[in-house]
Amino acid sequence: SQKIEQNSEALNIQEGKTATLTCNYTNYSPAYLQWYRQDPGRGPVFLLLIRENEKEKRKERLKVTFDTTLKQSLFHITASQPADSATYLCALNYGGSQGNLIFGKGTKLSVKP
Amino acid sequence: GAVVSQHPSRVICKSGTSVKIECRSLDFQATTMFWYRQFPKQSLMLMATSNEGSKATYEQGVEKDKFLINHASLTLSTLTVTSAHPEDSSFYICSARDRTGVYYEQYFGPGTRLTVT
Image 1: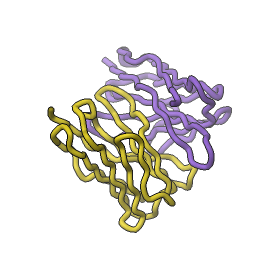
Image 2: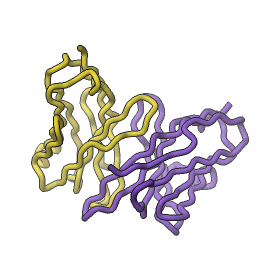
Image 3: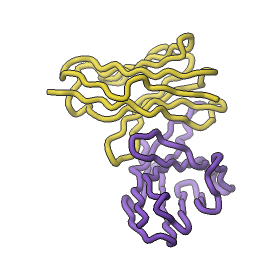
Image 4: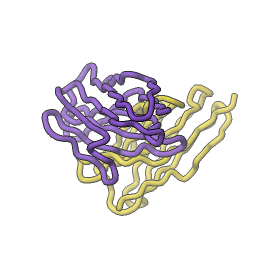
């Protein structure tokens, strides 16, 4: 069965630095992969979607890469701010492009001023 | 971006009673909606998938008679937890899929915290 792992349970960085979060999966490559932000007691908020034929995608200070050879996605936040502190979830689909999502456990990012 | 609302945000009920949670897509039509459950420090676990006008598909281990799902329209799905017990206490989150092109972005509601006493 497909498994998805976010290597770090927690990541602490200094304000202004780049945060890099890792998402690895086993078995087959998904048609697309999504990253979400989740604050305590709230539902996930969609950030970025990257397709299997895309290497990199950017949105403001966010950048996502997708390496189907390594079976890995990296999520970067540049010039991080304390307001970026949250849990970030990686999710990939299974069962084709219309398939359901499975989620990693998330990485809790803390940005210190 | 697409907005999904959920109501109520918090509910406390007594053991044995039933609770209904509503999920609405506010500015798009969602042919598919999903219900997830999340325990503290755990990942979101998919409970069921529902398509408008048809019966929900439940994940393995989820009791369909306990968690009743109705997807009556393209913008509304409901989850009813019947005869709730303390072990049903959890954070329930709905999600709706926005059909844009071939690949589908998925948007989540703010969640409902259910506490069964």
